[in-house]
Image (cartoon, rainbow, N blue to C red; front, side, top):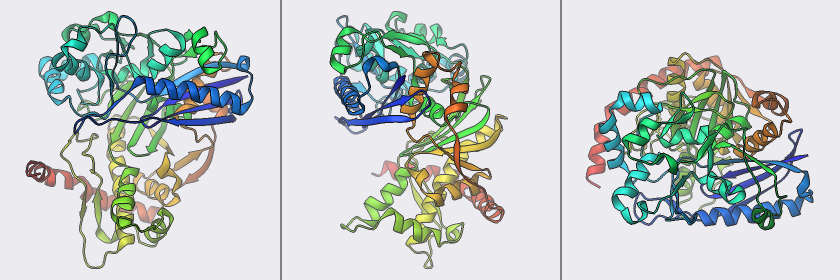
Length: 500
């Protein structure tokens, strides 16, 4: 028997097919555009998502030769926070406003002022951020009243795919946690938030646990995709919760680090915990429990910026491998050079859109290798900021599992281990959120009793990097300096923004 995992990313949908022992039988990826109609805006057409997904499923079934009747379940993962609006006839009313759209700061301020920090934390476990869904709804109400009056259903991005597959309006608890309309502690929509913001309860999709069956593939969807009518579709999860399942980060003591374009530090926990200062997100996990999560907006993106915009700006073709070789020859600490990785502003722990990337401490002895290594170290320091908050909440950190494009670098993994002071592992599963989604489908079909059992049987550590004591001591001193730099430069960042 086989299980399909669908991960609706920002740039492409990734679809994988696994068999019950966890082996990946095949995968495919289909891209679609992002639209930027105004500075700070970010939108997509939900029909682009569906066209890519249905074509990808059909292609994968043909490519693998698997009989559709042998595909027993489908799990969904996807970009979080996006707003999809449907009218009474299920037509999409406007382009989906995405997680990285920045147009809603006034709405965030309104929510915070209306409820106050304590009530907002009590009702949702989080603070109002421009990425979240609730401010987007208020923006539509204020700026597009013609659209607002036609709304009958609100969906998150991956749940539009669910609707097209099953005809059901549904979501899961982990994705719903990122709407700012969800009672994370009690795993249900927050009546208080919906009432205060005057959002009709009946607009919201029914909410399920991640491994619960939410619907079945319809005849129309079967005809379009090649799937068998009646195939189960489980709740699935937001991309970070699904990715954590895909790395086995489902038990207390295991922390995952996604070292992708952005950086995420994710800790599974058995009990609901909220950071009193709201520096971390507190969300439901896909395993029936909870997690806290810190997000830095530029992680591997910092290295990509360095290579694309600086090193190879004039058409050079110096490779990542060459630059990393140079960085490896530089001693830990980069000769006193520190890089602040705030190229897109920052979310955790500062939530500051004005923060800017910076090299601090440059002198005549520094070369390209020093600067490359400083970028690796600066990103690791930024990720450690989230790790320190996790420790403050008394959440154990026994092991870090790293994934994403940046994790391919052994040097970067060693830097992480030395700066974190803990073992950094890679696991055998490399398909990320799509793999987690497929695991949830297998649990929903009752191949495994729960997510923890599935992960223990399917996911194994296959490489470990241990911290080096001498490097740890060096980085401990440098991290103290790094931590003080933001406060010293915070007002300067605002001044720079005001003159540009």
